[in-house]
Every structure is written in structure tokens, then in C-alpha cells.
Length: 119
Image (cartoon, rainbow, N blue to C red):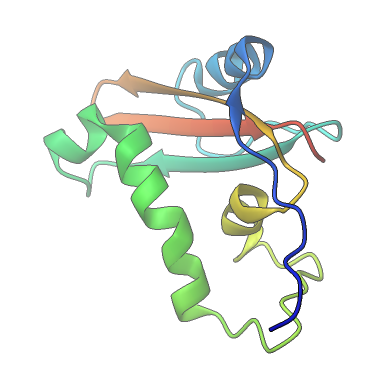
């Protein structure tokens, strides 16, 4: 068996949480541009249940990994800029060790976002 590469322990980062809070303010339908930090983003429209919207972050954290089930990532597991895999790839990136997340409900919609220390 080959050696395992170092994987960092995730730590909560309050500054990244503040970025996430600003990103979900007013429940935007698209992610906030941020070239400095990786980001996972989800807007929940009226088609989601009230419970899913009330727990937008849990809904998102359950949904983002699903993108790897529906998109062929091949054997090399290299993301060549695919928007379909961006949220998931930001979550699992080996050298990401800080994360901050937030959610916001706005009437019949909700938005969740997580920011990571790596772009």
C-alpha cells in the first residue's frame, strides 16, 4: 500500500464565517465573486421544502457531494474548472484547512455558503 498524502484537519475560521454571512445576505441566487477564497454556494428556491430552507446549510452540505455522483470525474480526479463540481471540489481539497459557513432565509427562499482558505 502506498503512503497517504497529508490531509489537514479542518478548523472553523470566524473571518471566513463573516465572508459567508455577507455572501448570503439578502439571499442572492448566484455566488459572490471572491478570487482569494474557495467557496461552496447554494440558493434554495421555492421548490424546496420549508424544512430544507430552514436548514439551508445542512441541505447544502448534503447536496454538494452529490455532484460527484452525477458528473464523471475520471480516474485522475482533476477539476479543470467545471462549475458542476466546484462546490464539491472546494470541500474536499486536500490543502484546505479553514472553513466558515452561513445561511440565510428570505421569505420563500434561502441561501447557504461556505468559504475556504484556499482559492
